[in-house]
Length: 527
Ligand code: 1PR
Image (cartoon, rainbow, N blue to C red; front, side):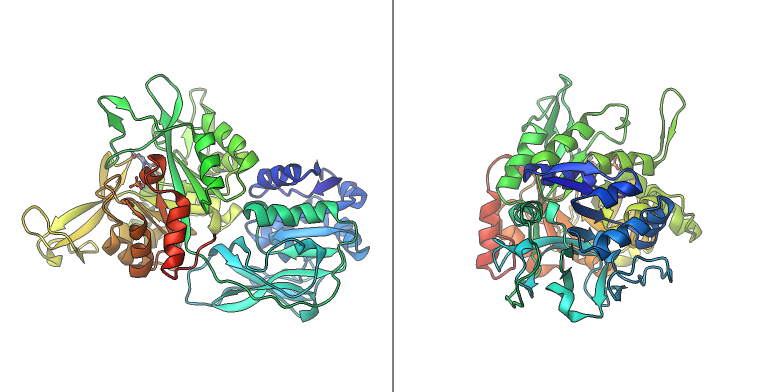
């Protein structure tokens, strides 16, 4: 079966193509308007900004053939913004008359005190007996990443609902036209099954109403792979103790990035993060191995992939200038769902705090505008600075520490660093997180140099302080040494996800054991 994919140039289409091919479909990309009308089955994946999506559809003359295809009730699957596109307009930006307007209703931003974007694995209550969801277990979870959701006028078109603070429509179907807010191509086996149904089933129309129970949003367990070249020039996964990755002078070699990522996917990791830890000094587009790692990984790993390291503007030896957006775009095309910015975010935040002005030119702003806030993660590398009393560091966010400093200090603040912890800056982790959120970041990956590789548990006071300061999700990182550290971080802080490296690489604790422990503690996870 040939599946036609409408790629309008935003986000990670490679994963969808890989998933369709994995499920036996052959992909044809839409190149001209007529390709839409010639399709047997059409998938429209979308991420990012609703208005820029519509702009591009208009520029490329895709709106008229799309409307015609939909009116003819031919098999159509919209994903995320590709589903939102079917509605009359978005709160993100209303463009009367410009939208496709196949379904009545509009797209609204989440109105909640919970973190926005809504990121992670969440359940669905199935409302129609649709062949699209055949074989999908009722307690299945899918991967969501969005700040806006649809509000259909006609409730009969709702295929699934999901609860994030309140229930909302997370998939729709009318005849052969269907759409999901969640990403099947990033939802492991359940998502692959859905795509297989779309590819294989001739008559996709729903057989009647249904009402299945749904599970709630999971806390995520993320496997992190710090990647760099070793002294022989081989790309390896390594791991430091407080960011020192050398042992007896050599870079620790803990395995190959693609095979380790595949292993963690099979073991149930909810996401995989690659950090190109020498990216701050090498230019990633000059030397392609990380792009190849993503391309290879995304062929077999169907959960979200984040890539960090070296995302900044750059001029190569031939004088060719690349913006941070150029670098990020290459990563998205290679299979990344999110990019993570470390050093550059610190410089950008420092400028923003100094001037109070958003220039629109920073990496965070540009990537967020094009690909959406949910695609921009800020990786913070803070180190603890001890103080005797809060007044000793009036410019910084000082907190009480559960540990005591070398001179009996009971307070500390967390100083941001750049270049993989090599250079400390005069900005604290809380200030950095707030500034980056204001500039358009969608998630914080919060490391801690003092805890990294120590197996002594997460820096709970740091995570709580950052979590309380922002409204975007926070990934706790650094220090996991056993299953109980994961339940502790979820019970004592508001972190939405926890990331670990060393314990997984050294095979001290399998991911499944972490998940089982969390489930036993009554913490919602994806099993
Ligand atoms: O500054 O934008 O080029 O990004 C560089 C990226 O590389 C940053 O995200 C930075 O955190 C990362 N990085 C740089 N140097 C190191 C190093 O270790 N020498 N790794 C490094 C940071 C932190 C986590 C780690 C957790 C969990 N590693 O990725 O995996 O701390 O470890 P644990 O569970 O074993 O305790 P830019």
